[in-house]
Length: 459
Image 1 (tube, rainbow, N blue to C red):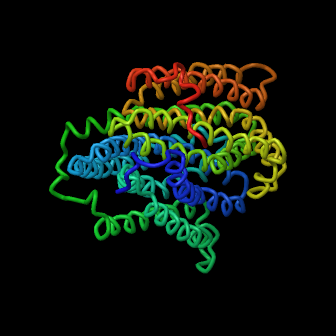
Image 2: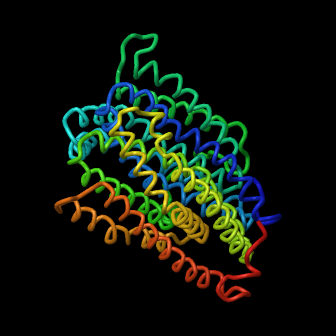
Image 3: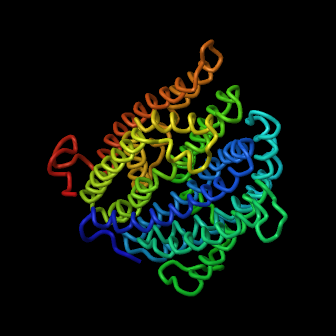
């Protein structure tokens, strides 16, 4: 366990964010490695994997439901120096992860094909996406175990073991991907199904690695079968914090689904370009997302210890750092976005769509960073409903107009991208307003009204 209630807040955020970013980078490499080898099959394969990959946001919604609740409650218990409570929450999250994994297997295999077929531009794209999703479903189910274990560690201020496991699993996936996708050594290429199978096998290995770490090396929170009988009261507490956070990612799934549906008339090349551009954007966001993932642990422990000024300092530090990082990423994407897309595909339509998407969408990078930061603070306070409300606003401001625009004469892809920029900016302003209100409600009025001046730490 690492005490985050003492010492410089900014230093603690960076110390946690660096290994988190490394781990998340390697986690994202799952998708990028798969996309690299899948790109050799053709644009239908790229579009199919990209379309099926939108289901990842459903999985992120469900795993966030588990992870956010676990981090928040474990960090609060650690801040209060209540080890038995932290241990109970951890073991109940393990039980919840097993239940969610079983449901994921059943749902993925029963309904995954229907979903991909309804989103794909043509039959070839649907076939490629369905093959990938069916093979990756076991890996998606096992993600819950990884999240439960990693989130408990993060709540105690420990992130390096999870990072090491993520690196090892990506190395394994990188070895397996060309063997299974392209048939290296075996001479039996499995195509997009091989991409899904490689990821599933790598995730399974990661679960084994992290489980062994807990069984042999972790002492503050321990795997205890005596606490595996479901306790409704504890599970409700986890879900009360986690469900709204999961709802945020479900909103992203709905938004992405609406985009794929709206642009399907432009063909698989457009869907492939958007898919590659979206994956690149996720990779670029990693440093800022890692910082946002560090916020709940740092602010959460201090909230549990009732050191409210340090909670405010955590927000300001994270907001300043994320804005600087996002500004740098914006400038890069305004300069030569096609360089990122050409790494995966040289097809002119894919490159044009993907590069244009990155250039336009980068205009809301700073706003996105502020949304991530606000979400992390909401998690640390144990109330993620305001964050969900902010995300839900985009269903009205983005999804409905995007669907309407797709039915109008002269509809273009750029209309969707610029609409997204405007609505993300509006969401950021909504998140900041709701956070200001929540901080006053939970922490009381700051020394300086409006959270200005003295409440900002040196960064």
